[in-house]
Structures are given as C-alpha cells and as structure tokens.
Length: 289
Length: 289
Image (cartoon, rainbow over all chains, first blue to last red; front, side, top):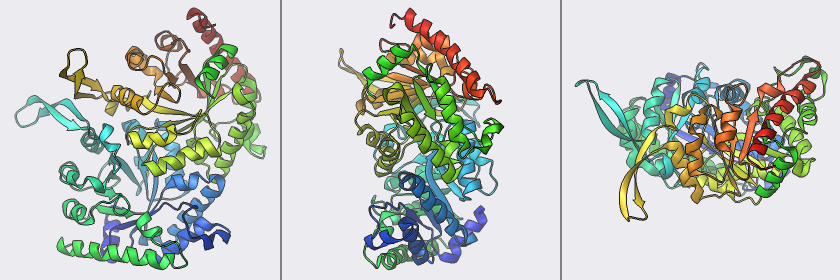
C-alpha cells in the first residue's frame, strides 16, 4: 500500500488506529482453546469485530514465534486472512529485525515477499546496510525504531552526541549536540524517504513529539503505547499529526484483552470504536476530513 | 552451559571456532534437495563433520524464518540434534532480537526454554528493559551487539557521545567522550555479568579490539566476520584473548559453503580443521593449553 492509499484509508475510516495482535495464548478467552488454531480464531474474531474502526493490524511476532511451528502457522493464517481485505487494512509485522545486509535481505523476504506484510519494524543499531535491504521492496514500508516507549529508551536513544556539522548558509563548521534518536531520524532519511520509511515514536514520550516532527515533518509515525502503556492520544495527535495524518497509533492489550469472556470481540470493537471516535475529532480539527 | 564449562570445552577441543549455520536452501548442494528436510540434512552432515574442530554452532535465524513453517521445522530439528551433544557444543541462536520487556520475555522463552539454545544475540537499541528478560534465565547467555562487522556500524555505533562522569578518585565531574558501542559495553555491565553476557565484536574492526578489552577484559566475545567478511584471525586472537580464552570466532560461508558438491561435509571439516589448528597455536601461545 502506498502513502496516498494509506491516507485515503484513514479518511475513509476516520481512524488512524492500529490494533496490536499481541495474541498471547495464555491470555485469550478460555473457550477458544478448543478451536483447531485458538490464536488464529482469536485474531479472526478480533479483526472482524474491529475492522470498521481500525486501519492497521500489527501482529507482534514474538508471541507467535514463542509457540514454534504452531505459532508460525497462526501468524501465516492471520496475515493471509488480513490480506483478503486488500487496501482496507495496512499490515505491520512487529519484528524489530536488523542484521548485516545478506541477513536483512532474508528477513525482508520473509515478511514482504512470503507473507506480504505492508510493513516491518526494524532496529537501526547496525546502520545503513542493515536497513537498505528492506527499502528495496516497492510499495513496502520499513518502520525504523527511533524513540521507543519503554524506560530503556533513556539508556542510548536519549543520549546526546556531539558532532561536527556545516552550517550551510554561513559555511562554517560547528559542533552540534544531538540525541541518538535524532541522529537516527536524520541519517536514515538518506537511505529512505516518506514513501517507504516510517518511524516508531513512543507515545509515552509525547514531550518529544515536537522534536521528532522538526526532523521528520512529513513521515508517517507508528506510535505504540496508547492504552496499557499509558500514552496520551490527545497529546500525540495534536503534536504529531501532519497534512497526511502521518500517524498510526497502536493499542494492543487495551483492545484485544479488554474482556476475556465470550463477549471479547464485542468489547474489543467497543474499545476500538471509542478510540476511533476520538481520532475522528482530531482529523476534523486538523481539517483532514 | 556455564563459563567454566565453556572454557573446559575450548581447552578440550583446542578450538574457539563457532560454525555459522547460515544454511540458505539456495546455496546447499543440489543432491540434498531430495531429502525430506534438505536444510536439516545439510546441517546434520556439517555438524557431524566439523564437530571435532568446533566448540559452537550458530544458526542464523533469518535463513530459517524466511522459509516459514518449513524453515522453523529445520531450525527446531537442528537445535534438537545439537542438544544431543550436551556439553560438547555451545549453541547460539543468531536472532538479533530485542523489544519492550513483555515481548523480550517471549523471545527469551522461544530460544532458551522452547529450543534450549545456550545463547541468543540481542540488539541493545531499546536499552535495559529490552535485555533484562533474557538475563533471567540461569545458565543461559545474552550476546549483546556492541560493535558489528558491517559498514553500517559506523553510522551509530562509532558515533561519539559526551557525557558527564564523576572521576572517583578526585571526586570531580568531567565531560568524557565515548563511542556508542563503548557506552553499550559499559552500561550493560550493570544489567548482566561475565557469567551471562557476551558481546558481538566484529573481526573486521580488530583495531578496536584493544578498546573493547579495556571495557570488558573478562567477558566472552562473539566475533563474526572471519572468512567471507575478511576479518583477521591472528589479530583478533592476539588482541582479544583473555585468561578464559574469552573468544568465540565465527565462520559461516567460508566453512559450510566451501564446496557445494558431494564432498561438501568433508571440505567443511578440512576448512574447520585448518582454523582449529591456528587456534590451537594461539591457545598455546597464551599458555591456556
């Protein structure tokens, strides 16, 4: 799905909600455990119920991988099911991959070619050639970790670096201090562009959203952490939205595990609908719909 | 396997060679493609042939994942086969994982609990709470990316940061410049220790080995890049070895794809034996055997 198609989808659904399919088999409703593939059955019902309110779905690969071959089967069935909806859903493999070139190429093939996800999350620690193989796939998206929502983000991402930069207008070289995540935002724009790169920016760091937007005003951002991790939808939307919306805001546990009774899908839909209504207001306020 | 057991294994085999099982189905000998599971058959023959010369095996998870469920089956069969050898082999899942705490916990469970690998490689970008869940598993090893062997390592890992540090003896606070990978080496020692943490240090950066050892004199290092990536075994061994050896040096393509004819396993054994002999000399020179 390309950038305009994603924007059209957002306007059509009046939503920029991404539902995180962190489908832990130990947390899904017990009555599903008799199904042939309980996790897929859970995902299918969650997707069917929340589809009017969500533009994107994001399986968290760890929760599938941890179940071995059975888990990979659930993941494959889930993405195949999502792919049936064509341009009605944007799909993200939350995999946090990244390795030397020939290995990143295999990861890109896994998620883009074999499973046909629209996007995959990657870690920038290994630099340009660990990211570039992902960027080679047309109409696919590489979502680079920039500023994550966990406390460990402070360890390295927020650390400041000094480096020389030439001030173009004056022609002088000056020492500039930038945080690591700012440098990731800046350098990675030499590898990708607004049509194939997004960034992970944690909602719980919305005080940093203005800084992020000063580096990447036009990119889409994947914002985790609204819900269980306590981010603020309002703050993120007001500070992060651009003229293509430019936001996909994720909620996982707050939607999919809102109930673990027979009514889980209905309750998930209610929670998704509540968020969608708020998002609709922010899209109207920004005059995008 | 604990640190002393690993050291004993190294002394017994007179080797610190790790064989990288980057078992790309498109590169394995054609005559194996008729086997029920060609990749597992390839791995099994490589392992059997190289076992006298190698202390560790490192499946590169991307090459398995990219084949979906069939690939995960090959990976599971490979680790089960390796686990039969008990303390005769140290096993590493080269997975480069790392995510928020509850997700890292699932990745740790995947590799340590379900598959019983001795070690897994992780990316430090997300900081302490992305690493700590891996460190909870007794007798298991977390191998943190520090300085990798690819050109992209220069993008962020080598970038220098200024930060305040208290000079203990003098009690004054001073501005210190450190590269990101140095900071990773330093900070991560607060989370783990020499008995559960190793670091990835690229052989093609052996000019940095002295710097690495000034931060982590006693840790084991996993060194990729000897062979196809052109690192120097001599330089790494002379600058990197400590009193527990402290090195696992990997070769993947240079061993496993040295021949793709009927004799591939025999040629792999010859290549592994050549490296082992050199390693034996370095261990003798260091008076470890």
